[in-house]
Image 1 (cartoon, rainbow, N blue to C red):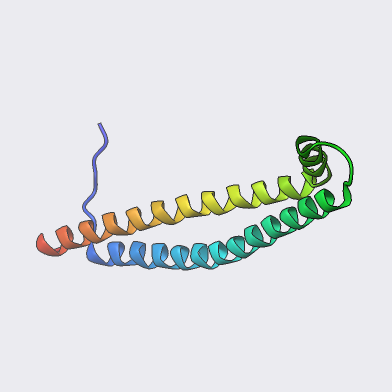
Image 2 (image 1 turned 90 degrees about the vertical axis):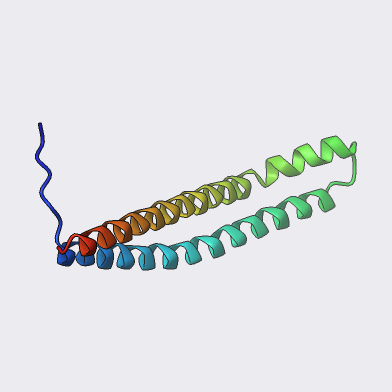
Length: 114
């Protein structure tokens, strides 16, 4: 059986400070990822549409298929950037939850006189 030691207000405040700093870092990183994702999406669409315009023969479906193949690397970069952006969003949500939990703990510690 594990014995849980009581927390003191100073420990809770230190935890909140660490979480706040981590949140700030993640928000800054999220901003960078958002721009990278937008640039990657733009590059994919530019390459795709340029490929469509260069094709003069074939059905619409064939032109689209060829354009997708010619822009495949840009599409891949876009989707990777999009996945990183979503992962960072989840980190931000988790950090916010941790901060809310620490605030609740802080209130309980203060109420108990710790």
